[in-house]
Length: 304
Image 1: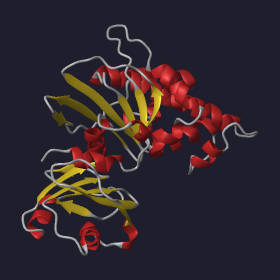
Image 2: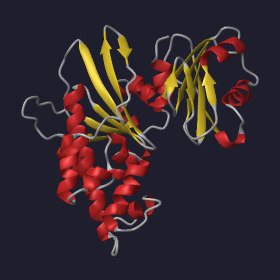
Image 3: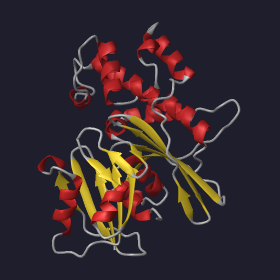
């Protein structure tokens, strides 16, 4: 029996997966604030059950050498320590976006919200890309061939900003681009707040109220800025699709991505994302991962 877990900033979800299968059993959710460590969550979940033979943990934080630290909570998840504690159980700790990568090509239609529907070419190797825009930014490349899926670890958020986006920013307002030197500096929670603050002249602490008032009188300036932000996400996707050639789909994840592309803003983003490139033209499908349990699906799909 495999135990799969998804540790987010606020909640941790756990479920069992029968050996040799990928079907997730009943999921239980825990509030992180009520526990001092991830191990305490496991102990509570396993009460009355036998110990698993495998454990796959996805977490919202950097993972190096099968050991990760949660970004906004003082939790460390150490694979070797967990293995020793549970009689040598096989343990794999991965980033939560990597988990979504392992899930992406296996998601059912009810787990995604399509923005652009496109037929993928029939090839022996399938490629996709998960783009996570939330507290931070990163991507998870997906390559599937001969029944094996590989999602290599990358750090795309800390690369220098694409020239096309810097140009677009400076066309909006001369000198605006210098406020966003890296990809994550713009495409993240703090990046979106900073962009909206600069565009409206207000000190924006939360973007959600402006999104909720979309189309209402008095919200015109914020609406225009958020429309522009959706366009900039599209420009970013147009660059990423050339860099990673995700012929089998672009998948968006993260709270900033989901909330930025509501209503007509999904169309605005898609128009820019599907722009033709002078040298390489692909038009992959574009979807938002809408199922909160998708990372658990990735943990179930991962071959140890």
